[in-house]
Image 1 (cartoon, rainbow, N blue to C red):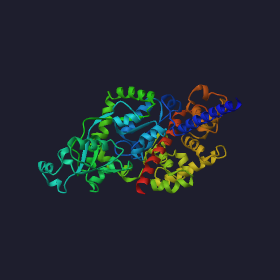
Image 2: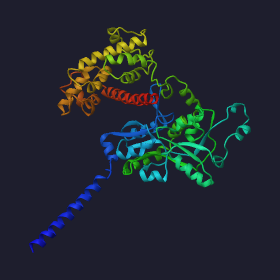
Image 3: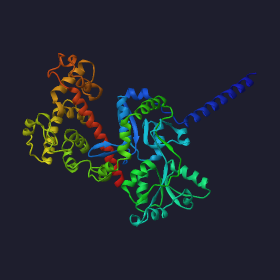
Image 4: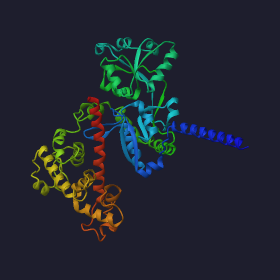
Length: 483
């Protein structure tokens, strides 16, 4: 009896352990599902967006971030009172993986809605409708040819693609389209696949420079590329109309619905048409940008003074791009700028402060920058015994440059009184500076410097820090491209 009892007990234990071991193994192989919808994004106050660095989506021009998808996203985040954090796309093949894992909340990259992609991701209401077109190179003497003669030397029909080799990224919507087209026309089209690190624009350039024979592009971007590379042709359509949209995580339903609600209404306005025309129909505007020295996409330069910033910012312990962002905020890189109250130069010194640091309205840009760095060093030294961490100190220094240290000290005292951290800028000291124009705060007994339009300085600080992030995004992209 005892022997039978123990045999049954051992059998049950073995089965139990086996079942649990199987469960644990299965569990270990499951990819965790990342969840973050609109409520979490609003609590954080920030929307993270994957955007491609190119001539239409996101770029810098004369120190200012621009681009169709960037500006459209910015309008949505402003509407929702959210901060926009841009994450440049380094590899188009990783977009949906990055969304799923929580690297970003949305991808704005001229993405075509396809059945395969709908399995992986949500898509918003369509932003644009376009078609896929073949990018081919015109003959060397194309400028001398009549239109009908030029047409004869170009591929005119999808049937002409049989036996030809087309280069595309395998992760793009173009790869399955070529495969389908090959079946439709009953002839083999050869496909040369490349990594998603090769952007559509780069492949178009390679057609222009004879590195590859053909590629595929979306018509809206192909038209812009023709302005840059007049020796390419994009007349041959190889698809039906296709929807271009933004992509969100599969479980971000509230975010998707919020964007859709806003987008449907915004697309009815003249502002949307103006924005679309600015990037996809204004050839004159594009050429003006492309030929400018400070179109960073081409030149890699942010301003006329990059080398001076790089030379002198180490004296302050700042990244040169932070100093550059601050100077843009002050003067838009215009050394002849004159401001309210007599401020002057790149750093917009007031006359008395300028005199103290050895500059006036006749001083060179170089001298103005050197004086600005010296003044910032003074402010940094002022704050260093109070805010020991150099990164935490940056917004206090920037704010002091704009409004003086006194109002910052008041904001710190208010923060301490109301239970916030006087050593932390974001969501602590910044709140009391922002609201220092309200009687409740500027009349408080701990305030010694009175009324202040703190909202101006608040915006000043955050606009500089945001622009600094754009400058880092773009210059990092350029550094990677040159390696």
